[in-house]
Amino acid sequence: MLILVPTELESGLLFPDGPPAPLAVCGFGLAAAGAGAAHAIAEHRSAAEDGVILVGAAGTYDPSRHPVGTAIRAGSVRCDGIGAGSGEGHRTAADLGFAAADSIAIGPGPELLSVAAAAGSVAEAAARSARYPAAAGEEMEGYAVAVATWLFGVDLTIVRGFSNAAGDRDRAGWQMDGALGRAAALVRGLAR
Image (cartoon, rainbow, N blue to C red; front, top):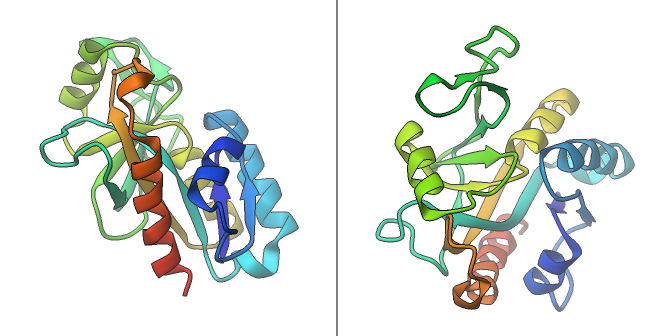
């Protein structure tokens, strides 16, 4: 398997004693992660043939269902922030006919929303959650990595640790260590 992590910071928190499989940093955000994932898959093709795991932090939309400090394995990933308009008048890339779908199924589990920019406020996060009620939380790389793995014909698993409530920009209350520790435990179970 090939493990992809968006940032060096997350990599160090996830696997301080070393990863259980080859690891590459794919980059932060949709553009960097898509290009970085494609590059990593091409560079580590034999490892990627057994599947790719994207792992990192996310913000939860519903802390009562997906508490801060926990981790999930995503079942699908949906893209938001690419399209036209905002709020009620927002039209996605698929709505506009520029993409086959805005959501990519990858396995069992809840949906994650890949965004171009993290919610800057609790109100913005609530609006996204209302627009996409199936989404457990938001992150910034999954959809782009899913497109890259689809292009290479390899399986993808996404594991995200909920470090904060989406829209909470006060890092003092974030639980990066706990969330990424739980995500790392899920990845170690998958990489056996």
